[in-house]
Image (cartoon, rainbow, N blue to C red; front, top):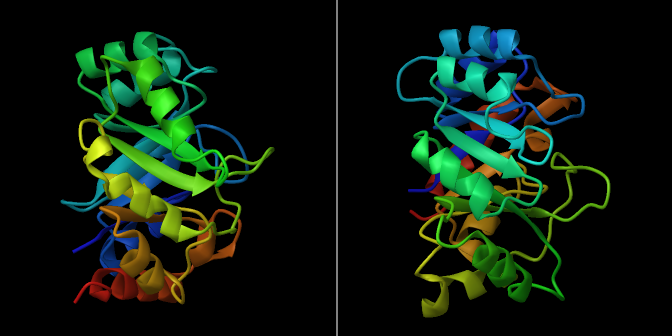
Length: 223
């Protein structure tokens, strides 16, 4: 059964609603945009989460190198899964692994360049590799939350044997909604799906009914 992460959570109430809708994880944005939150607010959100719904931090490794105040706050909040924006290399991934974090690479899909561009990025990270890869829609300005899809068929290339040495888990993002997530799961066969704007009533505020429909449709897609 596919896992579901609801990203861009900005209030404890939305976190609770996401968990009650059946989300396996919630995303806390420390990068930029209308969903960016402070460490203090993140601590309040995490405190509201029930068991078995995990927080995931979104961090730009180029703007927040390991050792700054944000990383100290994440460690204190016991956040383990880190969704990495920017261009992480071995020297940024290895310390995260050493400190007990679970790095997750965000890779924007450019159809004409994929999967060669991903292989090049992975090679630059060796021997320290991420635990998973989030495939999102490429946008020259906005990092996530674009509400735009890409051709999910391209992800099937990542199920080839040549990828098995580094990519155990694929996470599908980019323009997912309650109405298209079942098709996305059947086509791309991801480990998990990641949604933000597709379950919102306004930027940064989630809709309870949309979240419930999204989780239900995603988890039933492989039945």
